[in-house]
Length: 311
Image (tube, rainbow, N blue to C red; front, side, top):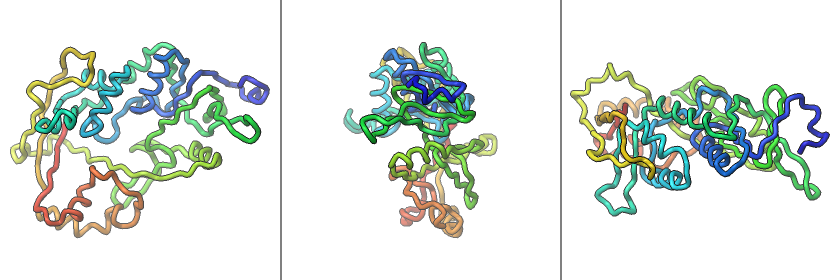
């Protein structure tokens, strides 16, 4: 990899593993590779958003909670980090058999993010770099076969490695929909990345677009909690990690309220403005996490739907 082909690059860095994207998957992948003895570069477009919880600031839930436990058993970060920063722990499906038990914890999203970044920064042989990846770098092997050997970043620096791991989340050619507004970006206030998508297409991969929704942020001071139902966490909360002896973070309640027919009428009257129904979004959303307008349409016979207010 250190041959003459790469001499045109003034800045060239060589690692065993390059991980692109520093969200949940990227930090776990980079940490795991470093623990196995590899020299790792973790590349992110913004050092201030490493481990940021963009959507719902929670860890676990049905099916997902089991995965977090498995990650913890393999030495991963999520279980220990949520145990340090969780503000409400609940065991879902607790009335069913053990195979259905699903741990879930609401996180202090900033505390979780800062703890993940601190852990990454203190991991030996793991370099955290702010770089915008613009191209996958390949070389020919065995005739016409191609092998990825690194990435080129904005500014024409080159990172070379035996393995490149893409954990880019929502940022590849990303589009954000806010009501009738449509903008390019992978997260509010941040841009999108097109170079990796173009590289994948040029290598023969088919690109698909997935859809996810982000719940609204509410100002707690504007909510009349006397009109809601309190939802406390478990009396004896169970940690995610096998290495955690006790949970020390202050626990906070969640709250439940409901829609009513007036809300349903308002939603139905404005369905033509909702991206999922106006044709603006053509992707299918998560099966078990429908938006409120989707619930009102699909379950029209229901008089109300639950709304969870989480700190």
